[in-house]
Length: 448
Ligand code: URA
Image (cartoon, rainbow, N blue to C red; front, side):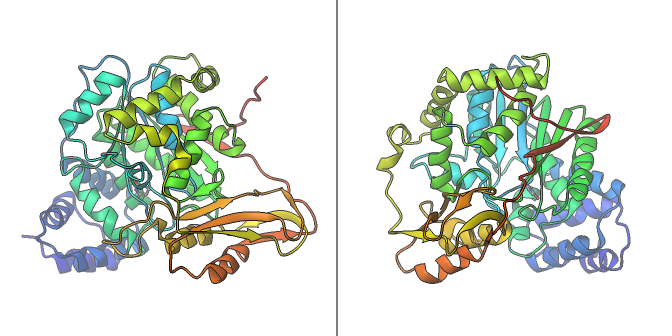
């Protein structure tokens, strides 16, 4: 019988755990036999001392086998999903999943909740009144077979060890750790019944991986695990040096996604969405290249098919379709406050992590495991990196709860945005692609 304190001590001192030891430790935690405080200590020890590649693979496999693997083999076509390592304003999945499904590639998507300063697709979807993310495995399979898409959360059957640990990591400062992220993401994704996977590994000060080098390291690990399970896996490194798109906060991001599904081009958001979507269409064998897949994704938006598909998912999962059709009817936040530039110049920097934390403070994320999120709260930017502003110009709007201190929060937001005398060169949004063969720089083709 494994002694939990011994396992914690061994990881604390930089030792290695065997697969049976890890299996017992994680299994006992999942069954509620090891308390949260011991798992917290274990996670912190892993945070500081890491895991070797054997431990990481065993950890992922144990999390995967803590639940069921959904069998989608009776559904025709290659099933492809996407997962992001987490960003601020990252609402890509909401646009991408219906867009790719509209191209004929089945998308079985299991998402998570907000984590740390980053948002989660599940919280965003649940901001649509009535939308049910708690699908049973049977309902999930039927939705993928019926309309080619299901957007769900982890049920008790899907990687339950990760479900429990993910919520704990969120509130114990143990997120930013390569093997923990890899195990968390890949156990969920491998349980979905996919044939191939696209990963969005965010790099930059607003991401869990602060540099491109660290993001590439994580991407290689994720691709390696995916390929070992026989799933073709492509990872893109994308920039998180500013929030993606304009909105940060659950319903605000859904509303922005609806405008994009209806054809609005928010350039950074739609670039990342189209590249990842193009890769999914390619891996789904509906296009001969990523670039051709991107063209199909654009057509799915222009033709209205992606938007139609989104309406189908919302309807099928019990969401209020009328509100999706008329998003301005949504119950607004009690206070909406303008934030204006204090000086003239160019926007040269966003403290993206701080902005993500500010959104949490506003009610869009959680500080404790049992906190409720307020779907209406958040931030909508009016300016992005490289934009020119004059003193007094609107830079953002804060959507706040009744008692929130608007003046203080506005100062906090303004001090997270740098305005300088000289403009800045904004770098590419998609930096590199990683596959089984290695890392290549990526250059997004221009649309003609
Ligand atoms: N997304 C996940 O699903 N898990 C992590 O640990 C980080 C991002």
